[in-house]
Length: 605
Image 1 (cartoon, one colour):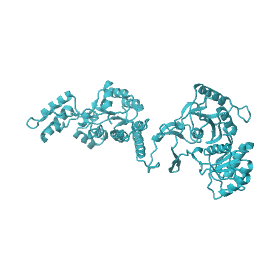
Image 2 (spheres, one colour):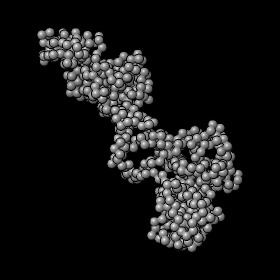
Image 3 (cartoon, helix red, strand yellow):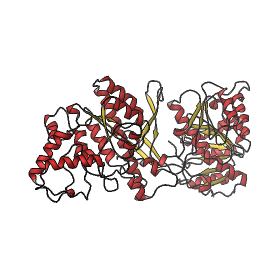
Image 4 (cartoon, one colour):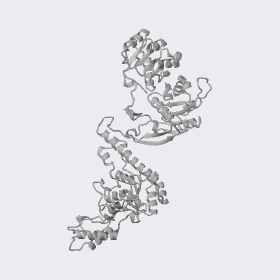
């Protein structure tokens, strides 16, 4: 985990000193020295490479150990010397850390790129090879996996036999371990992807081992994996206190860091196997974005986490939206904004969607986005007030003024109030105008959700996982099963209503005409009641409109289908699949209504 490969040879001056030490320890009649092969001299000297000699007597080796220990001595916090082990791929604020530790009297152990960066900053460094007595090998795969490193990290200072073992083998202790890992996450999510072999080589081995070792022994070793913690670390060391809670927090962060790293490796490798979308075991790495004022209700505590799965990188969604203005987002704000954004992103033409309590209460598509906005409000101005308004095109100065000044159709006087405006982008002038509407108005800029995401939902004691519902009218067939065939305009209305109804809570009914939602009924235990709510909201405009149902009608006569036909609906789109589908067909034929079966259900609970 220690940067690039380091030289296996000691410096000339160090080697010369080593040779002199060895010659004193090994009589000429017992050792034949060959200078043709470089040896590594360790700070904790036990031996030099046996390849440097043709013969070494056991007695001479014992003598050399005794002499070397007396001359070179162990670097150990137990003997008064404080040591810090630093190995960083991300070298942000390394100079601050290195100088801070050096000023506090720490001997810094490092290697490769980290050591070079420290030396360039004027910080003295001991190379890891001087401790391990062994060169980096296997293209850098083996650097720090050595007892001289891990013994110094894992030894418990309060265990006499641990310290005796270190002294016996001349191993010093580490007081601070600062490590971060190979950038596996960034590499495998980079533009263009990464070759499998390159991905494998970016899996860190030594780094996690050191982090876990230090975190396990956090009572004696401070472990840091985040550059944001460098100042706190240095302040802690300056204070000289022994705050176990501080140590435990760093240890927790270290294990969490490794766990998130391993989850990325696991996710990536599973995809490389070509396995099912639902692996036998699933880890979802979540990162705290913000603490929320409360949850759905004031008595519930809450927080918001961002999904750091590889599949979510650059995949869009409300979680990664940029907030340009307004109060902090609440729990319900996130739910409503997500519903509005998911709905509006489905439409190809310029569209406005207004959501209240996760249900779209107004949807309209027009070439003129101002008209679309007005129609979306008109669909249910009472529900729209205090809701979330979403657009799938840029909000410019003209649209921003309309949002700011538009009056409620209910009285023509009350200026419409919204909790959130969300769009893919804004002009500078558009943002300026919206900021002037209200200090509290939350203005979000979001990227469209990619298709094919995994949808997760929690139940007591477990999670449900499914494909996201990505189907659009272009993906399915609207099969005519009635005698009356719909006109082209009626078919377009049915497709629009069908796209709307997939975003309405079940049981769901949507009535639409001319690319505008006229009314919807949602969340009722029976479909007939949802229909009646939708009809009441649509009013007189229901004549000749399209009706979409998220699921089949279990009954037709003297039920939802007949009431819809009697109200003047021109075309009905539903999945079909009921044992009474024949009744629905017969009913529509009686009233001269077109009936379309989609063979696709859109339950939304």
